[in-house]
Amino acid sequence: MAVGALACARHRLPLAGEAVPAGFPSPAEEYLERPLDLNEYVAPRPEATFFVRVSGDSMIGAGIHHGDLLVVDRSQEPRPGNVVIALVDGEFTVKRLVREGEGLVLAPENEAYAPIALTPETEFSVWGVVRHVVHRV
Image (cartoon, rainbow, N blue to C red; front, side, top):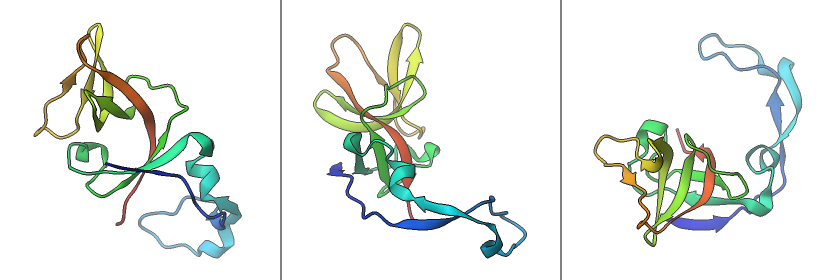
């Protein structure tokens, strides 16, 4: 997993004021809103934000595919239900944090992979909460 700092040029791009229908075309120029700064949108706290590239397919059920970029916020408190970047026994992984009974589990979103039970013996920490997924279509 490659970890890199968030370093985007400051460019404001136009944002359409209305959602674009996925069926009927509409003239977009009439609906322009204020410019959108992608830095503000994906990284409201840039000092705590970083990108990470995904390797593998354990999270395809969450729309996270091999080669995607994740925008991760280290300042957000991880909660059950969040997709997180975790360090487990010295290795990084991206999984969904799930409460199971009295404990926590790191759950994949691909049936080919088993959940990672977090026991008292597990060396575990959350590096950050995944806020956005960037992938090509």
